[in-house]
Image (cartoon, rainbow, N blue to C red; front, side):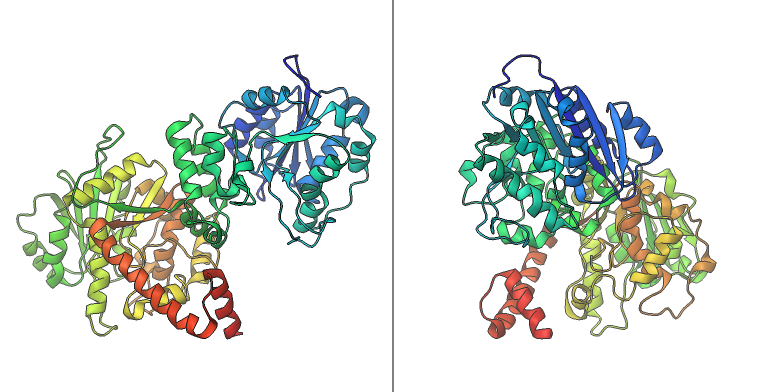
Length: 596
């Protein structure tokens, strides 16, 4: 059935789900684009939707329906298809079913609908999933995954909708209890079932040349689909799905590649993507998929592609060991001219020695005596809480000397790692500022976690240490709603040094911290409010709609690459001597099996 250039009447079903019932703005943009191509648009909300969101989206859709969140999107599709009755449905030239698991339109939907209207088809979709010679779900009647149209966007022509086979399919569709059944009972079989009955189908994105490269072209080659095939959508899960899966199929470049292309070449507002992901997803998943790592030059200033913003800057520096004041000053002098500097110290005696070390310091400097409580944290969130909102960017650092770990060179190397990757030199600092100017959703930059000597278990024990419950309770106190997960690491400034937009810590400072809330010396090595604050920083950043990232000076990245490679290679050799040579995921499972 060819539609050609006649005026086409379409019936559309859009299925929405959010566990908190919040419909982010990307839904509005998608629905507005879709509504231009459909005559009647039904919005189906699985579960709940906030009343204000229902009212807003109801101004775009012709009809809004809220149902219990049962049976996944396919059961909602069924209800949307059955709702008008097949007699009424058959009056439309096409029936469109789609859901909220994608962002778009990256290109006007009219391009796609116009192109497909010239094709002699009975049903079509945007993308296909290639044949897999087995059934990983245990629910597919064919015993394998046939090549099929992906069910997040399917279109049925009148020639199919009028058929008894189509009407029987949806009328008698079985109850779906889980994800595996949703795939096996519908998505994986629909295309083959109706193709075998003689109905013609096609996808807008032609991925035939990717056969053998991937089963899922949009997942593994999203930039190719968007740039070369003008695919009008990108899947949300591209930006947060489990990273080990990506590493099994590629080097992990796909998600960032496509996002950069959309940002640089298309008119779609990627802020819609950022806002939704930061509200709903865990930051560890997002960091790995989007590679929130800024490796900045300490040798050459990067020319900014955007107008200089003249951000107001502050350095907040806590000094406890006054003999380290000169060391701290040498890094502080790398801040740009015009920076306000706040130096906090524990008592009057140390104040005099620190002030002497800062004689002739070429910045507007204010010294504050904050008492010996709360280490470097209380001087920041209590002792300087009256000034943080005056600034666009703050660099927060402190002296660092570790007595409990011997030799003390280990602690010194951690201090070096923090200072070198925050205040390496003036060129590097200018590039840090440019990074914030060019990336409006960047909220915090922190050095990578320590991985040398006794600090190595930070990654094995987990960046949470014994602090997850304490941090979770603090998150509740601060009324945070972002995703915290014991099994997923925080992108936290372990070492308590970082660059930050103060407005990205609004919810932290809104608590109105007092010194009385801080533990008194001697402080335990773990599980205090100080350790919780150290880990809650990036979640406050995320709560305010920004993301935390790692930052390294190019000179330190040269060291860190070798550190990571040495650690991985030695560990892999030791493990493979016991388990045999394997891929990473196979090796990981083999080691887990050894432990069990």
